[in-house]
Image (cartoon, rainbow, N blue to C red; front, side, top):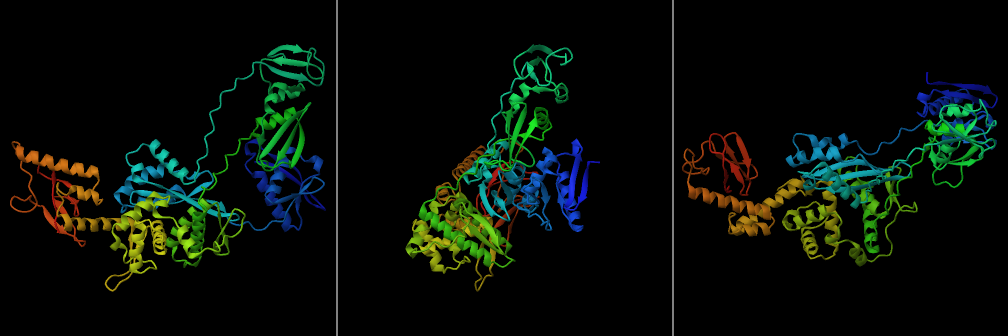
Length: 625
């Protein structure tokens, strides 16, 4: 049995006379739940649950009633008594965010990209479920790069979101400590602050002497315990002080009616908290300890005050009913300072996206998720709050007012307020746009309310760092597409409307660039490899490896085969490797099939091994369309 409660039925209601909860079941919410259950039964009987008279309520009961008052379940009357408030049916709590397993589950399937498989494990293991008061909302993989989104708030105050990117290069081949450092650096750069770790406390040396003042009788034989006794001092208290080399249990000093001076001296220096009060401040007043109890830590007026004996006060401290209060974490950093014109532009773009979100059909869940991510980032940057009005999303400013479009701005001011590509804070977005505008024909069929000539003009203006209506509109659309994870191409006479994942769209752009390179410079060779680097088809490291492979191959050719070793040959012509065939797929690319191993090389020169009984060597092949 966890305990018992005695209730007396009176004309004023059901009066709680006594509550006893066994020590192992205390501070687990059992008494609170019992009061709520009793109130429901009292309501069914046409009455109400109330407390005993004010002078008969002990500190534990006052704390419990105080908690019920603070949560709106009870009220305190002028005569110091309490009574419950008639209850409404409880609403189901609204769950926000996801668990780590829920968030990463879509990326643990067998058909995801290899680079995603390589990064998902470490990230899932190390990403925090919560950062301060932010809860993990979702994760999104774009190739091997990730965007991690968090959410905070509640139904009453509204919700806000924030996110940050983590790149594959910050995960692959890195230690857990390095990955955690990258997560923290990226999160804090985007406004998600990790709680500061408290400095390690220096050990406090225990006192070698414990002093107890005698408050009931003078010092004499039989008035004090002999174990650990050091001396008697006539100073202190009404009847002097006894000094010991040990700390007495509460039960012992209470029996001898001593006041534990040494323990009280330290205990009253500390502020405390409990289940019902965020701050409890003790003050020594003669033989008693006065405790002032504040519902909220920042309150200036206590909700209750009482005098406790030293034994009762130390009992509450030692049993954990009064817990030492830890200073609250520093408030979250203020939103980043934004230039006024840029702030107005972000404000208006945010409101446009909120209106767009509210007009979306329910079935467009992916589009809604992409919009919400952009809205959440802007809300955090501007210091606003997301809420709901009926079924519609609303955003309120720091004063709690619903935001409106910035008034009295000329069309030119609207254009100038929009950021240039170089002014965006998200490096992933800047890289994404720079890659696309190098292949402008890839966006001619982009499903955006712009004509083909407008898109061409917008790309030209973005490259020239010129602010225009078209450039701003295209940047906004690309930002939404990146958040959505798809580029949508319009339906034409010859092709259907199609959604292309961002990573696939990037690959198509690269293939197109490769075709341009081949048409202009021919097949890749040492003579034109620098042009391939300039066009972004190779990195400097890949170029160096390519040239080294060719140099090694020439040296091997000049040296000739070693005894018992066959010379590596191509896959066409005389002496072709048995079982090696060219296979053309639907995209016009080739695979080299060597025995049981397949190596996709596309249009680029890559090393490929000879397998089976052939010598294990690296060799270069050139696949032509």
